[in-house]
Image (cartoon, rainbow, N blue to C red; front, side, top):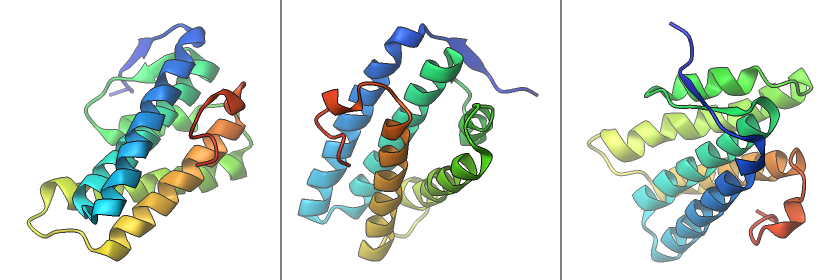
Length: 143
């Protein structure tokens, strides 16, 4: 079965950057409170929203599938240098793996796992913003 997507006007990509920024700020606040589960969940959603910004800008669509593998599949179709794309898809993949721990497993994530998730989210966001226009308009563009 193919990736389920929805057409979105290219001009809407900045809405997903803003969503990503909000999730990112929530992850930062969770870190201050040492709320590791909330940090991970928000870091993941920040990266997914940034993925939506990329796919909307470059392909005019975003994934609407239930599986995060759909997000990865759509991202992999972008016409970006393959090595660069693969490296940054690994950051996203690592986040999606730790999401399962944070949201579905019966143990709590550790501080190390949460900090690693935030680092992967930050790397992914930095890269994604570097691939989008007007990145300096966004408050969290240094993330």
